[in-house]
Length: 226
Image (cartoon, rainbow, N blue to C red; front, side):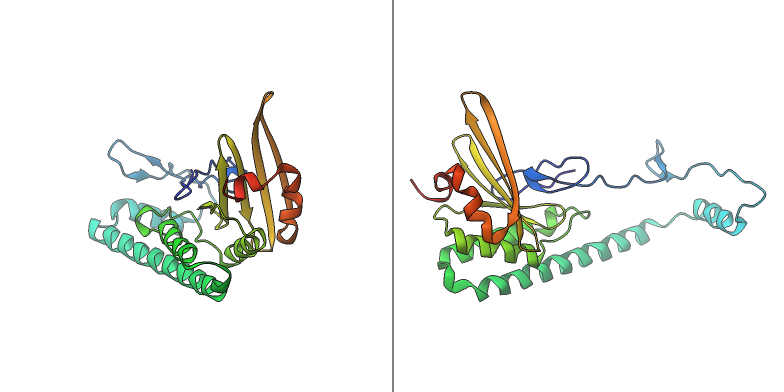
């Protein structure tokens, strides 16, 4: 289960953890039931013993005899949609306030571009209910890195299912990908195509040391215009 990284890259989620190209997504829990040929979820057969809780059994039987009406299911779906839209709106609003607080360090076109990318990442129409909206702390770490690196080539932005910002720069077949954690830490991955094939390097460092740890890999080829 992956969420597309809007405007630039796609995050491939490994089976257990992480985000973006550096990690990814947890498997969603499976229902205890199974799908019947009619499409209704059926619970496993009841196996009763002497010590079973018969009140729970009666409730399950009652649910089978009186399934929720279609109208009730639609109402619940509508409530869920409203809740998601509110969460996404609140998350976007808090991050836009954060961007405005450091607007003096960026030009207007970049600021407006961040607003558009944020709205795209939080699009309710394409939102996966199992994902987490982008965390304000993660975006704060991203902004600190951008102010320090001062890239003239702006990255494509995405988000991990945990709500971490993921930024990527690509030049030819070489790629720099950085995931930003709320705790002022970053995880970066570099993919270089060499005569020996694709080689990858990774690091997990405080955001204050990101520029320093990238230096051996000539980051200007990604961050600065040719």
